[in-house]
Length: 288
Image 1 (cartoon, rainbow, N blue to C red):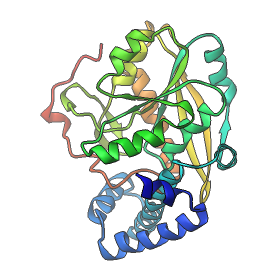
Image 2 (cartoon, rainbow, N blue to C red):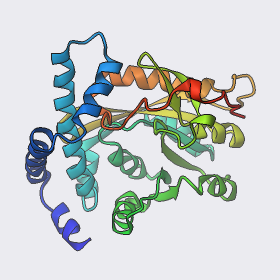
Image 3 (cartoon, one colour):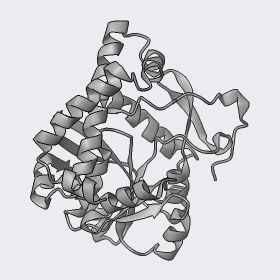
């Protein structure tokens, strides 16, 4: 941990130089998951040429290695530098709910750089929880928790979030969730068409929003230039949800996510197998 902390003290320009070297290794030498990335892009963008898809893939790998060093930098990045590098748009939407004593879910995707956005919200003086998936490696679990708890952020395991919501349901705060993660149980997922394909989506955020009657916001990350981002908030819906069909809240998120990724496709985590499950293999679940 000490080594990584010292490394994170390097200027971001130096860390980006390290990123360039790592990019060369994983893209040209190791060819890390290159087939998975290109297969995903072919399925998502059949209208693009192979040259265009390979250009997106190359840019994705550059963003991926930047994400690695920028996540490391978050371990020691000063508050003023974080404010300078991440601009928050439509903050008043969020502030209104917090001022009224609400718990608010902010749904994000695995866009570069998702690790910084919880920090910039917390620096506005708003309590922030982040839902995370615990890692099997103890060292990296402690390392990531050190990053995710900076500035007073409260990380909550995805396995204990429901219990945490019950015990703190009247505590105004933001809860950030990466809602595009692949569900562990496709048989209870929300299925919809995403980039021309039947796709299973994690629906736990909608379940909790309905259970606890919490407002839902979307958080779009735009890469402005290297090391600089814009985080824009927009509403999904507010309770009561009785008049909104079950699954509609997740559907709105999916449509927004697809539009977001068409704008900057190289910012998404394409190295995961996004379409490994087939809908016909699983029965249609009840979300409620």
